[in-house]
Image (cartoon, rainbow, N blue to C red; front, top):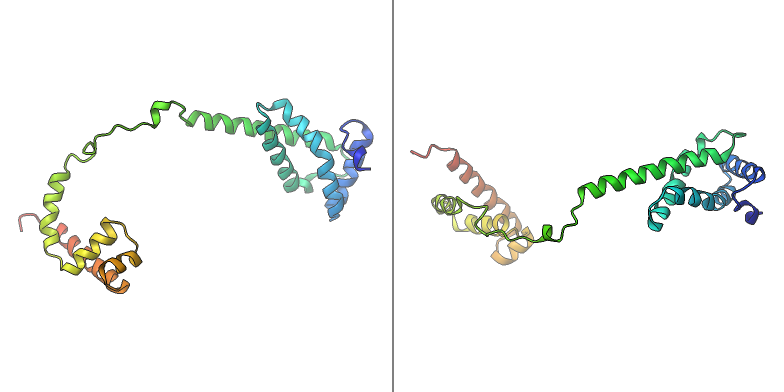
Length: 194
């Protein structure tokens, strides 16, 4: 019976597909599995008509089968199955083409686009001035606060790593970072003339 169902031609096939789908709607898992296996060659043929590559065909087939699974409840018993499947396959193929168009418009395939020749100081015109302004602010922190801030915020270590490197407990690191950030915020918020 399964061999006969894999042939995509004839009214008989469409009737059997309809019966299998109705049984699947009623909860028959075996009928549903047979239905999906038997429609796959038909769906693949529909996808091949609109596709640009063999890989894309299989993607569309999988998308169609997932869509059939999601919308199987919309099939009306007694209606032809092939037009219902063909409409789903056509829409999924069109969606795949649109997605491909969006992706290829956004992708850059120029080999020179991946090279970077930026000067390390190109994005930091005021780096020296910022570092000079930061020195007096850091001087007002305790050594433990300065160390905690440097390890966790500047070197981007985890609290566990910073604790191992500094000898401070994780709780101490958290407290020192919090207090250091509070002092720096207060200092930045003050008038530079003060």
